[in-house]
Image 1 (spheres, helix red, strand yellow):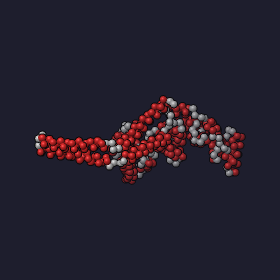
Image 2 (cartoon, helix red, strand yellow; image 1 turned 90 degrees about the vertical axis):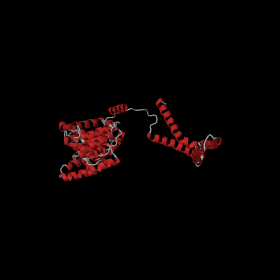
Image 3 (cartoon, one colour; image 1 turned 120 degrees about the horizontal axis):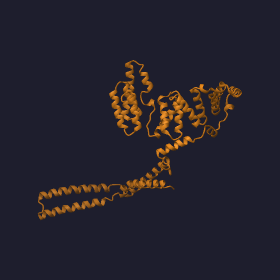
Image 4 (cartoon, helix red, strand yellow; image 1 turned 135 degrees about the vertical axis):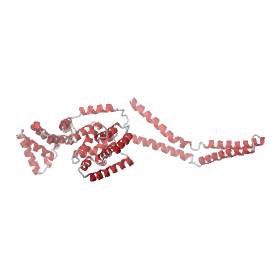
Length: 407
């Protein structure tokens, strides 16, 4: 048992004792203060008798004695009331039973919660160490062929309809007979993929790209990237990463490559980098693609891992497409459409609040309406709300810069 676990156990025990003590003390003590209340009553009664004796001896005159009696009587009544309140409280046995039940519930509840969410014996892992471990895991992860060997693929030709099986057999024969013919390998890759033979499709597509050489286009590499990742049950291998990087070098906004790059980092404990790639996909990518759908389904979980509350663009008021469409409208229609959407977004933020992306959208929309001063006011308010969150402030300032509100 390491020292870190011992320290953690002692800390938990101390906190549990303090929590249990806070619950037990008032209930266990019960009516212990009743004796103190009775003592107060006796003292005040003695004081009343002392006033009478002082009056007899001439120490006090009648007026002074009356004022003193009144004050002592008031205190006596208050002490009597307090004593009655204590006396009518719950029975001490019941109070202690409740205290024990609450203690058991408290300890059991915290134990179950830790069992579900905690990690007994797991030491501290600072952010720098997690990043280093993630990079090490990424650098040493299995190759494409190793991953395919762990997920062997059944040749689906036996499950295909007779016509497709016949075509596939003919394409396989043609590809190997005319090994230098690009078209034969390209057709073979498509038909293999159509019946689910993704690993075979990947080999055929690799041969196709090799034969195409410098004439291979982005779509050829995207097709290969799909075959490689699907062929390993969603695993992004070093070979798939190389292809994604190559695509992004030619087209930094390639939705498929951005998605797979994000998936790579999500699989290697780098949610911060995965979020940046997938955010680009969901905010700027084509919504009609499977890549956008996959990224949109996962980005909220990734955002929570890095402490962000992220909402998809279509959940945050007017989208970029809405704002671009508004530019082609008549000034009156454009003003009415945007004002309606902006008003709804502003009302929701004022009533419920929202993530920084919502505030950034509101700032951009107000700037398009020409309400620059209002946009700056919203920017100042949002910066006050998210002042301690550097990432959130960067999102807000980027939106303000894009809108021309700040330099």
